[in-house]
Length: 502
Image 1 (cartoon, rainbow, N blue to C red):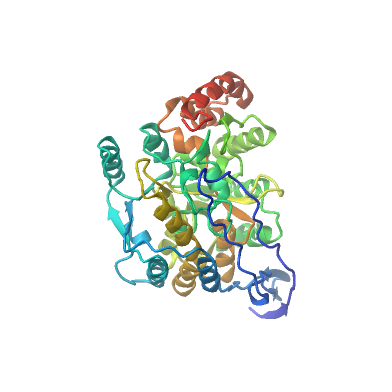
Image 2 (tube, rainbow, N blue to C red):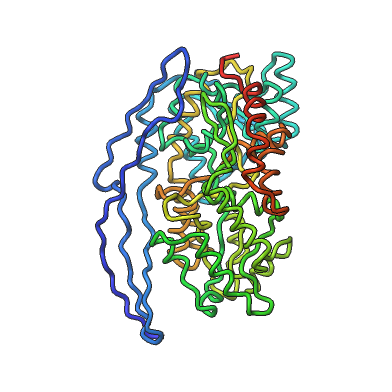
């Protein structure tokens, strides 16, 4: 096949990172809030140049964008060096986690591990400390944290726990209100994920941290697609739809329906259960089940036009269209070429490196063009929290600010390098990861208060995600569910998350 490649340089400048505040911070001692280091001309984010590929045989053209290679390591150095230097006097920072290698790899087995080791050394040298992990399963971490609390003893400085465990730890008074940590500023976008942390906040407290230090792309969900099958079906190229901001749920459904007349071919699938697939689609749409945040009582929000539209879409995708393939064998079906779109974590890429059909990934589509792409996160992800009886708050606050600053971007860069060398088949796939991770400001991670506190507080879970599932699977009206539950859940959450220091 003959191809003529023409390079068209673009000079569009992206908006500079916003730094508007999210949460009122730190009663008592005022934290040091660094100004972001000046962005030099070489650091300014621009769209990478387009490559226009012209297929003469098929009389088609499409745009391909090479991967942007910003020097995020230099930025991380500047962000770290902008912070106030403190001397911990050799006292270590302990992190209890079920995934020690995520924070303190034993050796540089990969360039990602090497970047994490280098990051740790930067922080340790700056603060005269040592980062030590205590590896244990979540039940052990909970038991040890509870025992230390009850005996007024020390267990660890920081706990790294699944998002769905926040409610369990909170219910036993084990979580420090993170607003009480000095030397932290959660509004700094290049340290912390403000949208995610908003969903971990309620009443007068902020209870979980998502930042550069604990982000792990392995646990982000992506939408894999079979490029070979898409071409055979004659559907649009999902890459182009993402680049042109036209990748919506309507487009996704339209493409899945193209498989209906083909025996043994399905439009979309996942190893997720139907209930979890409902959760995935709803959160990926950009909606949340509850309104919450610091200095706010959690309340229901799903009975709005967008929520109703998403539920209607899910009824079609899951039932009416008959295009869904779910179950533990869905991964194998996608590998064989029997599914057009497949939902799974980014870590599953390595399963498809030798797949006979060509494949790629895109973010899950938006409900409409006005919002960002939203990335569902696996429960294997680790949210950071601090035990409530910890007295080492000054060191912990300074450490968290530094560890997040020193992690900025470049660890993900190393991850991309591994994918590019060993697994992915085009630059578009890596560009799509920028939408999935949120590094190009057009995507973000999707967390929801209800899913983090509902597993422990059944009253919340029954009136949020379990109600949503009933609306889809049993054809309940969202508005009727909202009318039945909203007043009582506000009364309930106002008691559980009081609007005072309590």
